[in-house]
Length: 428
Ligand code: ACO
Image (cartoon, rainbow, N blue to C red; front, side, top):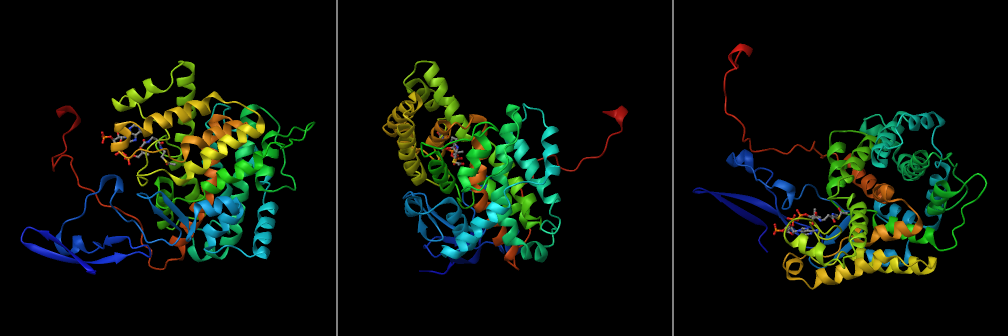
């Protein structure tokens, strides 16, 4: 194969190297294009732009493939756990038994937050969105660990292992405390439990009544978190890399990631899916009216479509099955699951969705699992953030460890006024 490619501008040819990834993906390396030709590439929404080289996650959207560090998501879902997958994503290898035990211990040791931070919760109104609280609290957390949030790369990296375990642990505690604060309930301190068991305990135990997980909620939640662990250069991860590229510490970078995740086109879609299913249910519709509205461009079928997947999102397949089994184990019949199945079937047979290659994405079924566990809809995107933490951390590490990494600074095509002279106030 040719290892260079040519761009012709007017009568001039410009040659550029072609970069090939380990899975055969190709990119024309146009980094010198502007210096050579005065021209830049224009790619609003970055659908055609490789922003980095990364070893972490591989997606083949055409064929519905997702692998972390080479391991297929289906194998991880079948055999691994959230914390083990987190270590794989962050450190590049499946951990030994001893390393996994040590990591679990680090996570457990870090599960409570500085009592000084308890008062931060008092400053938020009870109507505050949990994502606003989460991103503020993660950034504030850095202030309690100045040695880990110095913005000096060498120093921040020297504390990396500790910071990674601390963030994975405390994001879960902050999430549970956010829920308790909003409900006007007393905080529940972490106990000596596994990762998701501890989260459910901090969410749902009462001083007079310990939460008992007798329907496999912890296991379902662990799978949910694992399936969200990383997804290469999505909106929030690219934000984390952008912030990290300026030299910012890990706390600040992941806090920015939470803000980027919040929107309904990204992580906020899991809330929007349930709202959509509830609306369809309340209207007594079978979903066909909603599909017709989506086809006319009046609404979006939430949980459908993806920038990269032009096939079934492999995570949605796994979560669809998991939603069924958790509902069955609880003995709960959720009419929203039936609506989701009908909607999926109708969309997959409809020409509008077929021609645009719109398939269910990770958010289509995830909300039904969270709802079955008892997590309120407003907390759904926070749950996504807990799951995505390993991916954000791994991507921050890639930037911080790369001595050649440059600040991310795209260019633009200016379309505003050309030069004009300032007018005094009385002349306007
Ligand atoms: N419902 C109806 N039509 C859709 C949908 C949808 N969910 N998604 C895309 N389309 C249509 C678009 O209107 C467009 O149609 P056109 O060619 O006639 O103009 C075509 O499909 C291509 O869509 P784009 O908007 O160009 O796709 P893009 O890659 O920019 O957006 C996105 C991807 C944001 C995920 C989009 O599909 C969407 O909004 N989906 C619903 C929200 C959602 O589920 N988000 C979660 C994504 S996964 C994640 O972040 C975890």
